[in-house]
Picture 1 (tube, rainbow, N blue to C red):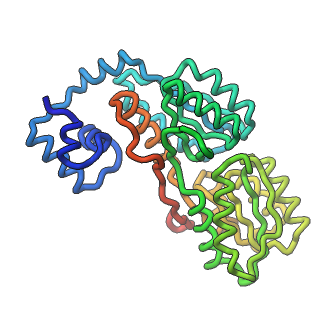
Picture 2: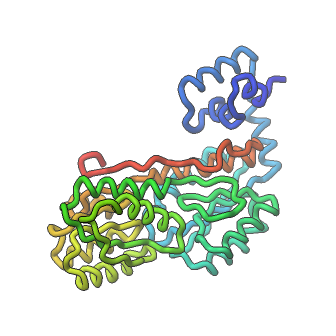
Length: 338
């Protein structure tokens, strides 16, 4: 009997790659795809989707999805990616339990994880970077639950893999871009999401590293907005009133619309160079109004799609991730290439 494993061994690729080619899922290099398909044809491989689906339904794969998505429109595309991928896998009996939360409260996330623990075979989570959550993730893994961190990773856990952007590179990209478009002397105000989120800290660190050799760049103030537009409005307005010399605003995560509304309320939109992340509708609106100069895009739809794909391959096909980090490329977007 010709198996996926045999094709993978003969082609020198992973079983996951063969599965993606045969089932036409995910991105595979054209030359690899051709190699796998030719080998499968030579060996006379014939997939049995009906038998595979029946076997999977007997396992009753259940995936928990826990995101800090309330009030954060960035996650709309992440959720869309997860949902569309999950729909493809319904034939295999895949069930999804959705849980969301607002902000980054450790106790709230812990309680939801405890509630999900006995109900799921896998967990896709946007984790708070806290020791309590890290220990809980390890308990999930130790009990046989497959764990994927999405959009943000967490320090020192047994999680199986991470799907998201490279946050340090995102910060470095923002810093490099600022050098190209900012005033020669830049007094920078930073609106950060939350220090409880590993990626936000990494993005800030990458930005600070990239601009540190420029003596004309000065970070005047850093404030957190907990990825909330109302909070973002308040802290941004107070910052700009306290430090009127600020001529650059770097918005590290969500809360972009709230920050821009604060800028507009003070009539300072022509005085500021503003950099942000992601292309949610309200951010695009601010770009069209020429409030935001540029954003850095981190492919939220693909993050969601890929996370669910990795989970499916493990639960249904028994295929371990071929890497521990699935990184989406940071891309600079301006109004003309949205």
